[in-house]
Length: 219
Image (cartoon, rainbow, N blue to C red; front, side, top):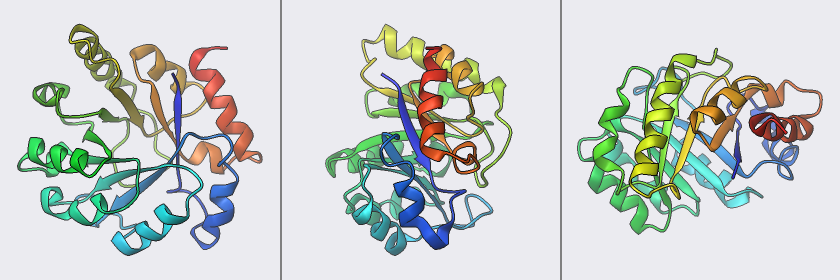
């Protein structure tokens, strides 16, 4: 199954309800990037503004926490009605406990890694997570070039899930997704794709989401 998560990082923040409505009929989830200006150089939403978006979104919300001290700072996000929460391995002191906290709040728990982090660091937590998020750009800003060199990470993660009978878990890629790179990521083993600037720069955002879905599978 292919899932398209629409990021609003490159949307018009002054007109978010309308921007979200453009893709609501086509995307599977709304991807919300939470940045604190410390873990990554950019700053986006705080818990209060994120909660407002979650409560008013017509789509299930996928929270991507790019924040430092994630073990502690994740708590207010677990109290929101989001569908999933991704935390960065690089920002965790106790990944297993934090993933458990997210799961116990009724959400999908995802472990994310930056391009410079080996995928092998995720393997000990396969039983504790519901999704692996492989960043295909350096996190912090939208509109960056897709890093194809991350695809062996995706392939190895898919191999682990298959070998362990865990293919119900998702593999998400985030960064630089377009009509060409989504196919590359799909063939490597990803099933969940964060679409960003390619959609909101299109004259037909909803149609672009639908096009990405068909490009992934080659249909």
